[in-house]
Amino acid sequence: MKRNAFVFAVLAVAILGMLTLGKWADRRRPKHASTSSLVGDLQGAQAPDFELTSLDGRKVKLSDFRGKAVVLNFWATWCAPCKIEMPWFVDLQNQYAREGLTIIGIAMDDSAPQKIAEFTSEVGVNYPVLLGTNKVSEAYGDVEYLPTTFYINRQGKIVGKVAGLIGRSEIEDDARKALNADPGKAAMSSNVGVPSGNADAPAAR
Image (cartoon, rainbow, N blue to C red; front, side, top):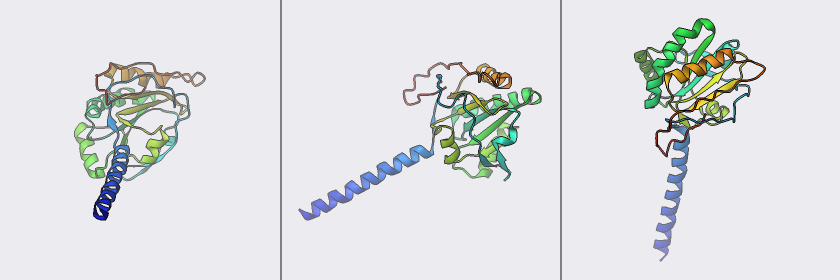
C-alpha cells in the first residue's frame, strides 16, 4: 500500500513537471499565425524602446531610428509564413528607404546567430536583423504568434499591428501609412487578412 502511494506521488510530481515545462516551452516558442484581425492593445502608444544585439554583434536601439518609419517584424527561421513575407520586406526596404522607411527584423530563434545569419544571407535580407529576447517580446504585448509585425511612425508611435501572414500589397499599404501617419492623429491600420481555417492560430491586428 505504501509502495503504491509512493509510486502515485512520483507520477504526480512527474506529470506536474511536464506540464510546467510544456508551458515554459510554449511561451519560449511563438506559434505560427496565418490570419489577422484588428486589435488595439498597443496601437497609438509609444513603441517601447529596446537594446538588442545585431547579427554582427552591434548593440542596436529602436530609438536609433527615431525620425524614420519602422516596420518591426518578429520572425523565426522555422516559421514558414515568415519565409514568404521576408522577400517582400527586402523589396520594401529597397523601394522606400529613401523616403525614410526602415525594416527591422527580430529573430525569435534558439538557433546560433551564425545559423540565422546564413539564413538571412540566403534570403538576401538587406535590413537590420536583431536577436530577440523574452524581454522585448513581453514589452510588445507578449508576442505569441509569428510572424508579428508592428508599424511605427516617425514619432515612434505604433500605428498598426499584424499577427500572421497577409498579402504583399497590404504590407506595403501599412508601411506607407507608417511613413505618412499624422502624428496628431496616430492613424491606425485596418486591413484584415483572410482566415486560414486554422483554429490553433488566432491572429491579432
